[in-house]
Length: 219
Image (cartoon, rainbow, N blue to C red):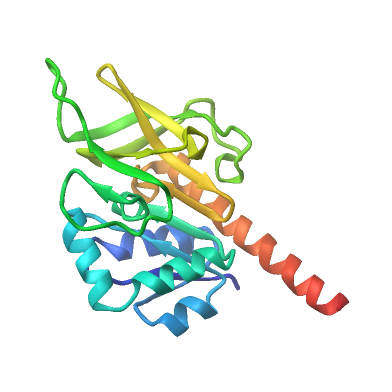
């Protein structure tokens, strides 16, 4: 069975992310052990809360460099909500440096008349990387559930895998670079489309694991 490690750093409800992945057919393991992360087939970094405490919790567990190394190794990696923000260089929400794996910053929504901040509720995803495996079997412009006041602003627009529009502002809602994927919305709270995204991630990990095993046998 596909084993997915969910990083435990005291930021958010890990149970809901695990339940969604388990419903998709994966076995999950909540952990802050580097060895466990390295041995898993894939790693998920969820998160709810503020940027600076998240970085501080990761640093206190000596997880910052291991996360960078795991992503660099090519292991499938999924960030969710705050787990997306952490991947960038920094945030307007705080003063800590992010992991810097994705060049760019986390920005606050610009105030405008009648714009609700935080952006909370359902919004339609516009896919800018439509052939991304994470989006397989989704309806056109699917509705996903968001709760955030800040959004990722990658330096390279090509890193953006999907956007949303809130008020007059169109912002990044997901990024994808090789084995690294991250989403601003909460797939575990996004009904059928959210569960399909988690199923797609599990399927991607499973296919990659099967390919690696086949290659090893051939050698």
